Image (cartoon, rainbow, N blue to C red; front, side, top):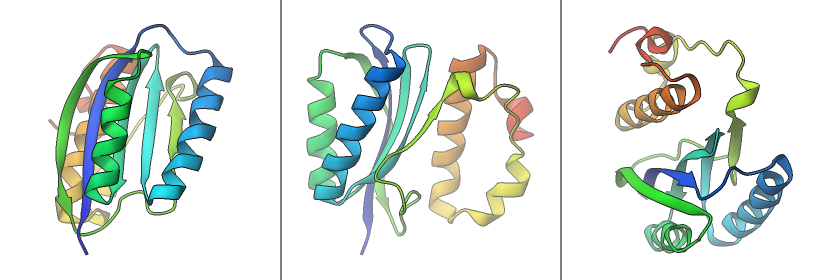
Length: 146
């Protein structure tokens, strides 16, 4: 069975506090579990990048709800499509806060061979975009190549 994925970036109308992020994650994880969604949310300095995956109708309904949420603005879809396998099968919603990355470095060559073919480009876009938002510079240094 194929899995539908959407990767999007957005900005918060205002920066989220740690408590607001915790509340958002609790809500998302509970709701995602009910409709068969998994994914990952990255947050830094008021900006989000999120991967949603699962049944297409559930992904699209969730994204529509996010698009109508006044806490988000400037939503940009980076990718959408069908894949063979989930990337975040064990996470109702994985999460990483940019402030916790410190000296975040990432060796693309070590992880790329372990990703399913259709997922490598998606993960690369997600990591590079997050890194640029978190550090204000291109991600070629973290991924080893452009």
